[in-house]
Structure formats: structure tokens, C-alpha cells
Image (cartoon, rainbow, N blue to C red; front, top):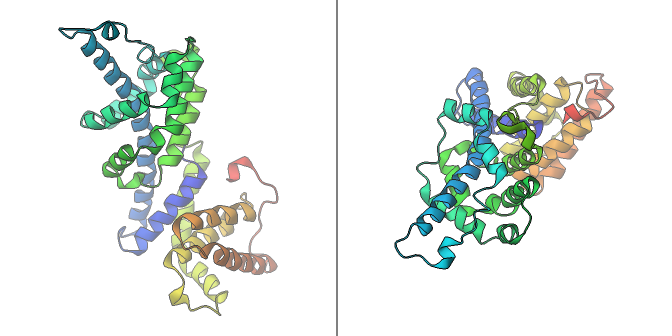
Length: 316
């Protein structure tokens, strides 16, 4: 789940925090990086938990309506299609989900107002109305409902966004990435797997974990070398006026370009230019692209970098 795109963003955030004096030592910065990545994975489970929390709330509402002292025919005829969703039942019984939630003591218990709000938004959505009106009762339709709700309803909910920000400072920039993996998880579910259905792991493999560690270490240990390269190629610029974030982005980019032979230069540069669009000024993309391109040209002339010529899926 923690892919290299997210790792690069987290490394840049930790570098920024380190230079602002919030991390202390390099060792602490590394601990902070993996703590941050762990919190992102925690968010994955928190959002998966919402599926069951909202369904339980819906069940209680139906029972309350049906047990009123004075009921109407409409109260007694409420459809249970939403609360009997087979995907939700399977997820609520998932062994890996239960293990992680228990181990990390995750709970939405203190967020009743949020659950109520999300249920209200869901029931007002087109996806919910189409699902409830359909005569189809299939496992695939049950999955498709929650995929649609995460993509078009929950991901844009302002109240949920605020709650997540209050729960962890590390989640501000992670929601879109995590939601994409929630949607992927739902797609991967198979009814035949039952409670043993696998969930997405924190890292795809050990290589990604090592990539995160080494990218941060190389950025910090080789700081002077990379800043000297930047300074040598910005002689026409007043370095004091270059955005601090631009310096950090180029530092991380050079750490990757110079130390990961399996990742093609164009992949590294494109990824950091995309990060620039999110975290720096409107003009920074072209500026950083030009400086890095000039540095790479000189490093290649001096045979100081040997890079993969072919893009591989693991490179990104």
C-alpha cells in the first residue's frame, strides 16, 4: 500500500521537518519517517472500519423505527438490503482486520456524530438510491456500492476530512492515496475467501521499505554534495531567494538519481516534478526540471551515475 510515490512525499516532509529543527538527529528523522508511514497504513484500516460502523448505525436505525410504540406501514417495511450487504459482513469478519484493529486499539466509538453524518450523506447519494431500488441481490453489486461510495461520496466529505486531520497530523496529504487503496481492496475481495480474505500489506515488499530508509539516509548524509551541485548550477540565481522547498525537493531527487541504479533518471525526475506541483510554487516545476537536467548531464559526462535504461514497475 505504501508505494514509492507516497514514500517520496513522506521523505520530503521529514526533510523539511528535520531542517526546521523538529526531528533532532538523523536517527530520529528515520524513526519519524517510518512512524509517519505507519500512520498512513493505520488510516487504511480506519477507513475500512467505517464500512461496518455505518452499517451498524443503519441497523440500529431500522430496529428503532420498527420498535416504535406507534409504527406506520412504512416503518415495518424498511428494506434491509443495505444492512444485509454481504461484502460488509465479510469485511466485519475479516481476521486480519480484527487482528490489526485489536493490536492498535482502533475505534470510531467517540465519533457518533460523524457516523450519523456519513450515513445521511450516503442515503442521499445516487449510488445508494440506485442500489436500494435495484431488484438485483448480488455480492458484486454489494461491492460495487461501497466502491462507488468511497470514490464519489466519502472521499469528498468535509466532516470526515476534518476528523481525520484531528486524529493525526500525518493524514493531511494521504487521504486520496489511501482511498484509492480502499477501492482496490474492495475490488480484490472474493466471497469464497470468507474471513481469510487478504488485505493490502503496508509495503509491497522489503525493497520498498529499504527504498524509504535509504532515500532519507542518502538525502541527509550527502547533503553537502547535493547542495554543492545545486549551487554550481544556479550561479545566475540568488540562492537565498530560491524556495526552501525547492532545495529540499532537489536534494531528495539527487539522492535518488545518484544512489538507485535500477530507477531510470526520467522516472525520478518526473516523480519529483509532480511533487513540486503539490508543495512548491507555480514556477518551481520548470526551474527544478532545468537545474536537475543540467546536473544529470554533467554527472553523466563524468561517469558519476549509471542508470537503468528501461522502466520497470518496481522502479516507480
